[in-house]
Image (cartoon, rainbow, N blue to C red; front, top):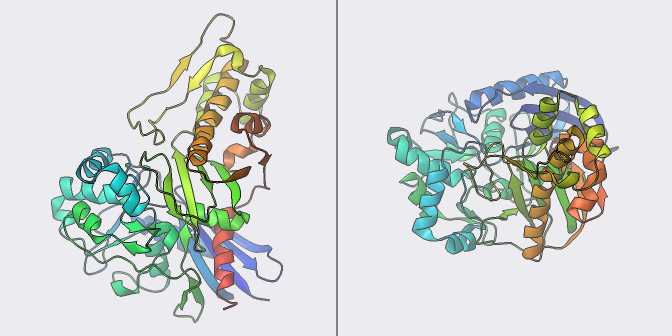
Length: 429
């Protein structure tokens, strides 16, 4: 029997699972919270990682490990390995004007062809342009640009400001594909785009081969790691034809594809997966929080909210919620607001409002599936995961709104499990 460790360093928390490679079962687990906000000192992630590992009983008996993490975050390092400023996370939208500037300079179609992406405020490239334009003194110090999971892997291997060997940083293809300056089609960084964003060249972590690994100071195998969505796909065992719909703080719709995807409209991000394939993805900013805010407005808990929604008829009597409470990423409307329409004396009931919230959220995710279909990505079923999938109303309405058969896997830490599976694979090569 061998034990492996998988880590999910997400926006809200760090979660650790210790998995028995023989049975595939989780033998121990740990967790530690992350601070709120869209701009965070990466040291908080490092502290949470150490606390979560300790909460899981430590890693002394672990043979291999891997870290998956939230994508796109900008970890800017100087030549001494110090973090220059707080990391801007995926949900920090201040770089929206920078995204528009890059599109104006290069053209959406050219950018999609070169990197699989059309920049929006979420992606690392736009955060680097924002840094160049608004904090030029910080931009000038940048010697290396890392992503959250790259940086945490580096730290757990024993590197950092007291041992700043920047050449020991590495990343994986799934997370590199979310930067906006790496191409899933060619497998190479686009240095011209990096320089256009940051203002100068910088060290970028090499992309480790999907089957590659290194050793840590304790002789344990360390896998390449992954972006959170790619790790979730691996943890779920998703295959071509599967679409994963994840309803968390944000909503994501992604599918396993054998071919790279480039969408000049920017609706679909042409990400890579961890294994050598591709993971086209659509993201929305408004997902489970739509249910939370509406339940709070109605003064009920999640269970009572679900019951209210299920008592209403399909279509909510004409009541319709466009749930852009925090702007939106898909479509790219960072300044949009939510709109409730179709209000009449007959339609404006508690039940219809609850139903309109569920249907409105699911319609946003259904539009993501339509965008994938438009690029000829094969879709045969939906795997529905995330905190929002715990809602009975969401589970019951999902198949009709999403127009595909829906499977709801048991609630588990699929990102961390995917990282553990990646770590286990390093023991068989």
